[in-house]
Image (cartoon, rainbow, N blue to C red):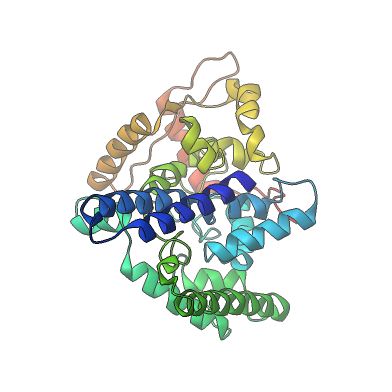
Length: 345
């Protein structure tokens, strides 16, 4: 928790330092260095939200005490403009009924990914103006007690944070006011003190350069089976290097996380080794993982009903035949019952 927070502030300070060292005599080489520092800072900052620390702190696993988990949850949520009040009940539903069409509005399959446009690469490598603009509108509405569509659908969010739950709704509005007015106050301070540049690395630091976050997070469920009770068929585990693992809080072990959501993120690699005989094989590295996913996405474009079904181990350590798995997945889609897993209290 603390190292990632320290990394964010360290790269933020580096960007601030480089900006103030840039002048008319050195801008031709200092500007590229500053832009590179901002790119690195944004890449790290994109992991600050619900994809990493906010997600795990909502699970209450990083620290042993509730007070520390709640404190750092608020710190990370404020810096990254994260709606932890709404995310927490939404994520409970996501774990209880993972990618079940009628019960999980957090991840809806099939997921689409259009990387054929220049806009996609610009928004992922630099920033998405529409995302920032729509996000600001969302926070204004939330501060007034209304929940509109943004990252998740408005219908889903109003379902998990219903108006009938006046206490939760009041907490949601209060948090939105804290985030909105808090960042507004900081922006005023930055401008008034002549440090307006800090708006870029601090206020917007978690909203830019999301390319690596996308590469790490999108494999979780994309191309897999909806409406099945077996987490091995609807979640994907892959392995990767130490830096993505650190930034992503080991969420690449996603099958294991869904099977045992109370296991702290730092123990997921150990958990994987303990239950590996019962899990499907994994790809090693982001490159290999996305090579597999790209093939799956192409097949889904040709056949909207296609889903990737990983080979599951049998009792003697052998892997199930594809035909058997397809039949079981089809039966699961028709008869799937919601697997209620205790996630967060």
